[in-house]
Amino acid sequence: MTAVAVVGANGFIGSRLVEQWHLGGELDVVPIVRRPSAAASAARFGLDCRVADALDEDGLSRALAGADAVVHAAAGGRQLVTRSAATLARAAARAGVAHVVYLSSMAVHGWHPPPGTDEASPLPARLPVPYGRWKADAERVLAEGCRALGLRLVVLRPGIVYGPRSAWIDRFARAVLDDEATVVEGGRGVCNAVYVDNLAFAIRQALVRTDVWDEAFLISDAAPVSWRELYEPICLALGRTWQSVRSLPARPPTRTRRERYVELRDSRWSQAALGPVPVRLRYALSQAVDGWLDGPAGAPADDAEAERPPIADLELSDLQTATYRFPVDKAHRVLGYRPAVPFEEAGRRTIAWLRFAGFPVRDDRERGT
Ligand SMILES: NC(=O)c1ccc[n+]([C@@H]2O[C@H](COP(=O)([O-])OP(=O)(O)OC[C@H]3O[C@@H](n4cnc5c(N)ncnc54)[C@H](OP(=O)(O)O)[C@@H]3O)[C@@H](O)[C@H]2O)c1
Image 1 (cartoon, rainbow, N blue to C red):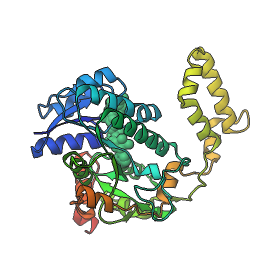
Image 2 (spheres, rainbow, N blue to C red):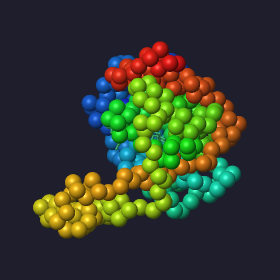
Image 3 (cartoon, rainbow, N blue to C red):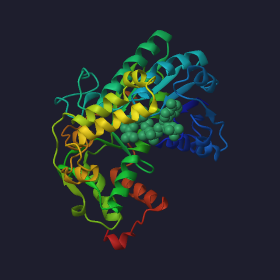
């Protein structure tokens, strides 16, 4: 049986891959987590869970020993996204792992691409949200590394992955309960959603179709849905109406001064430059910049916060005003991808999980369904 290592095995997607493949008995799973405490979920299956950081080539190559293939399902900030790609290619080659599946994202195309965009379209050099650029860089580095090292690479570009344990669902449900849920422009935008089990099937196909080399595939569910269609059943399940969700206006695709400052502050270059600066001085500098960004000197921060009109997060605004439905024909044709779980069933399973996770979900009669 093929042994498949999963990097990020305790994450939302990684943990589902481990469960499905182990319980389905189709593949031998080698879960890889970065902290010993994260091994708990795989340990309940008695699996040989290994600990390695995706940025540590030596550790990762040791953790990959004996695997035939590896799925990169780790997520993080710029450093993790851009640096783990090259590390993975080198570590896989050293461990003798021949097949690599990388979870990229539709975001590499931006959420407002020209009509007709598909896997063959050039990736935009500039995007309003940096995440898509990081993923595009990672794809490029990984493709170069795998070509040079003779490894088979398949890149999957899922849209919004939802289902039990999804952060998209968990965050929204919590906001609904706190009466703080928002969407952009009524949630009318296209959500290129994919249920996690449908994505797991696409990943399995990428592993078993060993004739597919160096290809990328867009992945989403069979039927298009809007953000409202994704989120309204959660409101109803939690005893709220869609009217309780505040609709924010879309915002222009440019970052505010504060967002530009945060990106600069968190960049590798500033972190390196600020490294030798004493902590107290760094704190004073950051307070001064915060004060300047919050408005006139002397205005209490809370007042400044209260007076600021609510503004949609740039990434959510970009996502929730999308009008383009990405095609998945290539995945159907080449990988044999068939999203078997329809949206209604995926919704039922997601709400069942919310109940299991302790959210106060009403039963069907109370919801009138
Ligand atoms: N969720 C979506 O909607 C979506 C959509 C498109 C693409 N994707 C892609 O799918 C992949 C998985 O996403 P997800 O939603 O499952 O993410 P997630 O739930 O946030 O899980 C991320 C996993 O990565 C691990 N990780 C982070 N830094 C690591 C490091 N340095 N070394 C090893 N492991 C590390 C985390 O471990 P800790 O618990 O220790 O932090 C966690 O297990 C990502 O590449 C993401 O870009 C996701």
